[in-house]
Length: 366
Ligand SMILES: C[S@@+](CC[C@H](N)C(=O)[O-])C[C@H]1O[C@@H](n2cnc3c(N)ncnc32)[C@H](O)[C@@H]1O
Ligand code: SF4
Image 1 (cartoon, protein in one colour):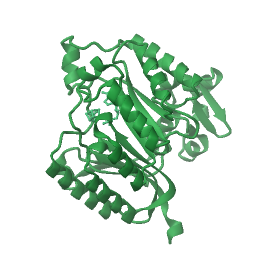
Image 2: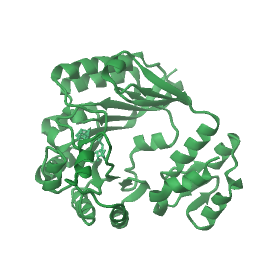
Image 3: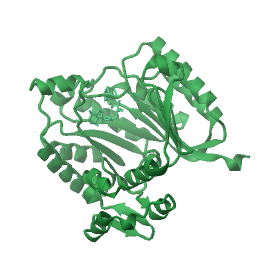
Image 4: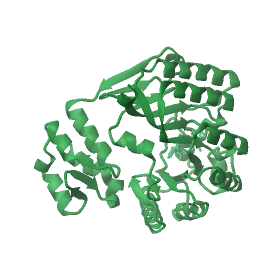
């Protein structure tokens, strides 16, 4: 029976934060102890109710800030996961943390639980920016915690946000972070979401992010710098040393099955996408939406997901779905211009064009 287990990636959403950052639109909030307990109770129920027959190849604790969660509650979630899934021996188990909510005790606990990858939100190494955006840590504290994290974990990733400040800074920060021996960097371009305090700050000219042109320049400089340091770009925002790509994220982009537990989590199971409610009360009542990904929708998703990362797209699969990409005139032009590369039956986007992947993908859709 055990041999018949199907591989799956598991995401756990922990929506708690010590304070809400001014730019952040993720489903997260400041919570009391009681809210954490209540949430974990429902989360565990959701895990228990999930169907049997799967083995977990990756587990990702994301947020919010998972490191804000009480350790005994985290232990209970792990127990529930172990009861539901066979966890593969070499499973990648990631915990998102931010520098102000982690310490030696927590890092040791995560390690004992089986966590083997840490993703730390650094965002910037400029104290003024950090303060302005509502972060609770300084540059010095962030680097101290990072150094601690690398003592406990070999596989550490850092998040940076590009566009917050002067265009040279992001390369400066990446250079500093790499010295700590991290294996992976995610660098997201700042998004100013309408429903965030940052939006009002920008509108009232109290905060001025980089303009689009400077962002593009800064992004290119970062790409070049990271490449020289041996960090391969395997997706628009993600760079890693060879073998340290996030297996969990690659599973999303590979069209593999994944299940998300918790508020606002998404799952993709046997061709159906599910989305849990982002309202706490509705989530507790089990409300979620679903959509079958079939026909043109499946073709679109396979092109979109495959081209935005190093996985590429499988021409044979598309053919089986009734779409012959070779008949698309833009496809042939992109191949000639070396924007796309074809190896056997697979097609990859040249990483130099990740930043404009939306434009290219748009021209390849049915
Ligand atoms: C779910 S957040 C969790 C990280 C963790 N709570 C922290 O703040 O350190 C994941 C990442 O998304 C990025 N992010 C959040 N809001 C963003 C925004 N408005 N624009 C660009 N990146 C953003 C940040 O880099 C952040 O580390
Ligand atoms: S960036 Fe991280 S710490 Fe800040 S509000 Fe978002 S999830 Fe919470």
